[in-house]
Image (cartoon, rainbow, N blue to C red):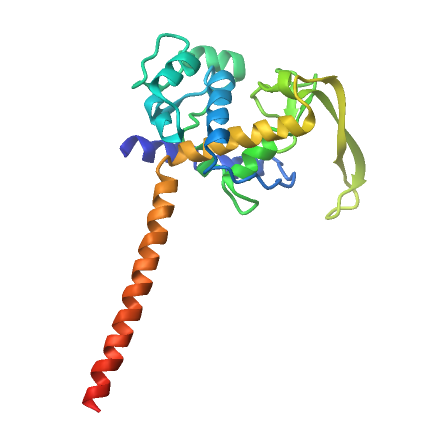
Length: 254
């Protein structure tokens, strides 16, 4: 519990920093797949293959993936590649020194990233879903990539082989608040090289990955929601019985 609180505190300011840095791109609605076992399993696979090389999920253990329908054998055969054990935490071996040298900062822990990215603009899932789909090639950046949701992002586009390579087109317009200034408004993407997946397939894969990140932020959320429904039904039945009992008692008194 202490570790979870520290993680939430560590990333709580990230959304505000992102918007303060000029991120005004509207967020797309992420598909809700937190109860879809097949989507969560595919998301877990994408997370281990593409995210866990640089990021950690130090509040999550591999064996918790049994909650989304994976057996220990499936976890061992498909998700453990460097000698980890099923009971180990999802950590990587990237040192903080190397991370700073390569990316300019240590990649954040992703255990609760879907919760930390929530803001008035949308849910954390919406932010992640849009962010992972709005990378574009930008040779002026150290990594060669930029992002519409998080301008001047330090993280490269790790899913580029799946999505392909795209450039962004911008048009110059007068600033709505200051006519003496001009702003560059995004007008669309142009595909430079196709990826392994079609646009629809890539969006679907990102939806699965984001669903897994949502689930990982609170693995017990589906149980909590089911229990909540049961409790509400119980309270409704109890309230009805109490109301009828009260009416019956006062009827005799009268």
